[in-house]
Amino acid sequence: MLLKNTSTRFGHISILIHWLVALAVYGMFALGLWMVTLSYYDAWYHRAPELHKSIGILIFIVIVIRLIWRFISPPPKPLASYSQFTRISSKLAHFTLYIVLFGILASGYLISTADGDSISVFGWFDVPATLTEQGIQADTAGIIHLYFAWIAMVLSLLHGLAALKHHFIDRDITLKRMFGFNPDIK
Image (cartoon, rainbow, N blue to C red; front, side, top):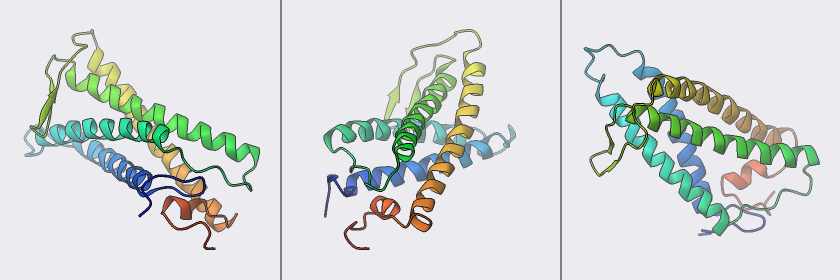
């Protein structure tokens, strides 16, 4: 089992974190869309936001671990076949996705703690409120949260389409590397 990345392959830890965050973010997006349709008398009206907050804090922790892991185990080198445009756009897309995800998480935190209450993460631990009662904090953070969530969906779909383009049109090993397949096997 290859845990760390090599110059040609992603290790299993990077692959696991990548797909875990991707699934969690899509799940959170769906949960968020569903939550706003709930009425006050719905059984999930209070439970769904608590679940959303708890998972959001865990995603934040995993993304921080992922960034630390990138320094411990740098990603594989770009393929020699990549154009300069592909190399630059890839770095820009990854950087933008990180900024947008942190924006979603920060704005979610500001929404959740605007009234001064901490966030309980599944009852395991609490994340205290730091910025509270900043006027229209929850409303402003809510708008940012909504737009950044949609931006994350669009960017991640483009990211996925680019991977599929590499696989089916360019016929390179980009997608295979992210699934953990040996790049030496064509």
